[in-house]
Length: 157
Image (cartoon, rainbow, N blue to C red; front, side, top):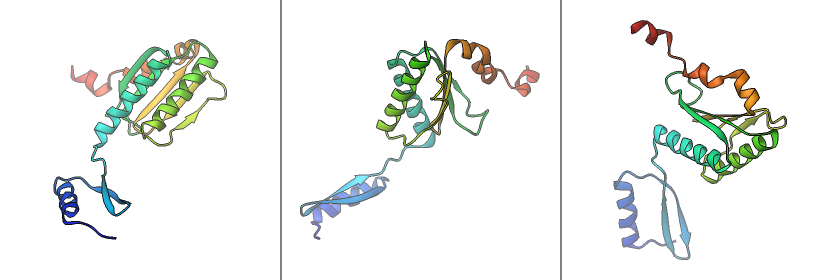
């Protein structure tokens, strides 16, 4: 392995600007440094939310609602609740979403309820997604439960 002085200088510039290196790959006789993402947790959660919203909208999901639950739950920062027209549509929304999340680099999400297709929950870490059939969504009314004001906030006003 050899490294030229200009390459050492470029690597030093990358390091001195605060970017961590994931690895250094060799291509022939030259090195190329790959910077590691310095994305904060809040930025990653917002990017995940954007990916989820774009995916469910692209899948023609209905009644898309998202809630910021960062201060209310330690499970996630955001919750997304959507409806599908039928069991098959609910399953298709979820499969498309799982594919989009994987393509965007959010790793493996956990999924429950896909077999039945009435209510599917996808946990992607920063965002929890609930995909319902309309009748099931009306019965559970989960977004109303999470959107309710805190008792402490209510007593202060």
